[in-house]
Length: 192
Image (cartoon, rainbow, N blue to C red):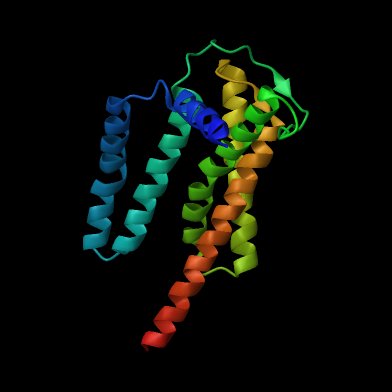
């Protein structure tokens, strides 16, 4: 079991290698300038609520982090652009490479859980089924965009497995977000 944990941590380190503190600070500054400064004016003029502004900021920031991990940290042309249509989640009974594929799939799921949670928060006034469907669709579009970008820039391969695992992670995140929204609604009703 310890061996699997080391392999998993090794893959996590591999996936964040090439992301530097200055990139994260720059992302934070750009999101602050683009979202928070105009948003502050909108909050002061009562056009949006502060909670909505914070949600926009966090969503934009997290999208930037996703793009840093999946595209920006990689050198353009560093990976031969291929299309992998076979779905492969790996296998526990297989060898090292099959287990690594499980770990990559798990990381894709984990990467999109916060994304799905943040996106569904924009739909708190929708029926829950519609909010879930729209969020999963947005997760699909985001993942598809990432895979196409990786293919075109040769920073990765277009992998259907990645799309499936990303969408699954987004669906888990959206479900968690809907549960949070339902709990908030019930809490607010009990406060009245």
